[in-house]
Length: 176
Image (cartoon, rainbow, N blue to C red; front, top):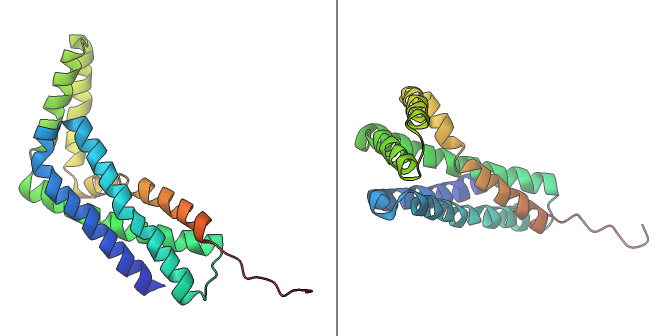
């Protein structure tokens, strides 16, 4: 099981991390909303390897049958490995190459609030909230934890669906 989890998890992690590296330079040109859609779409595509990993486990290790719980565990572990790759990539990008990312994000958010007609009081409250978050986000452990929960739910949903589709019980003997 370990080999399948690592193989499919690392491939999925390489895809999701690679897509982050490819699309991040275009983040400003795409806009925040389009970047989110592109990011989560690439996560879904990368996490499709969860399905193939569970199927590989069922067919090659478990003899063609796998119960729902085991299939879910294999899928969830693949999602965790891929999410850890995503976190590692983001940590390097954020702390080494884009330490101003959060500042740009804050400026865009406040700009959008002004354009949407928010009051100056609401904008100043939002800015204070975002400044507090920025201080927390500088801590690598908090940064990693918050980044980990971005892709993981997507991977877990795909693991759940994959387990439901691919789980099979052993057929009981006829007349038994």
